[in-house]
Image (tube, rainbow, N blue to C red):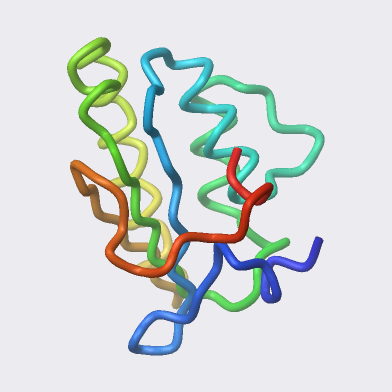
Length: 127
């Protein structure tokens, strides 16, 4: 599937893709990594561990452009069930954002307690 034509990659106001990852009901590291991998179309070599997440977030060569915004929706369950997992995710995202700033790219991210205010993706496109 071409991420540029995927409904999970609507254009943000400034033109770079806004990638929404729904974490509703996500309460484990394994489920978190699976949802991120699915939504960001990680390659087959993704190892479903923290190091592999960091590696993929500092590559993203399979996605269009060099600038992305990742919006994590419905983060409450994960943050409540596994605060340490959520803290590690924050560290990895911050490191990846810093990497892209040093490499003429932009990776920013945000978290919302509920879903996005935008129109939901068509049925069958969510992880």
